[in-house]
Image (cartoon, rainbow, N blue to C red; front, side, top):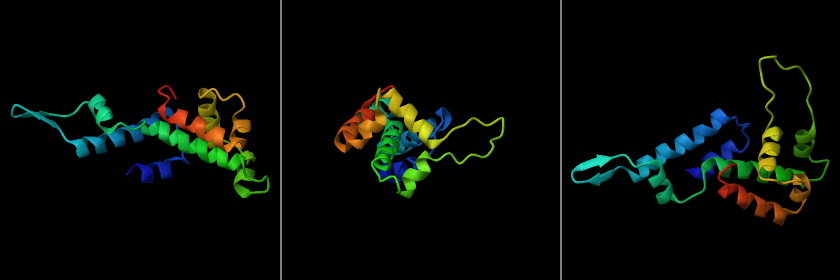
Length: 144
């Protein structure tokens, strides 16, 4: 379930509101998988903390952010003539409605990398091993 879901979401430009949605979806699935607790002829729904202890996997939002950063690092290591790299660093221009906030995919990637305290994020991304190590930290980082 998780690989399919994270594959789709790594290209999303997330906001705080739609960052909650994957967590809610995952908790609903986990509630169905693990079911209620039965004690003394009564049952009650498991608490989220109990589900976390049973499932013992990183937060799905952090996994999504890690996937997004992994893809960004891959694009940074590409040759300058590759289409994904040209698209990533190109500003398409045009006008935006006044009531819309500017929310680009690369802005979210840079925000996630900044929270991870990557001072030279794009330099670090050139070294695949160092970048992968940083991505593992993202998955378990509680405040990201």
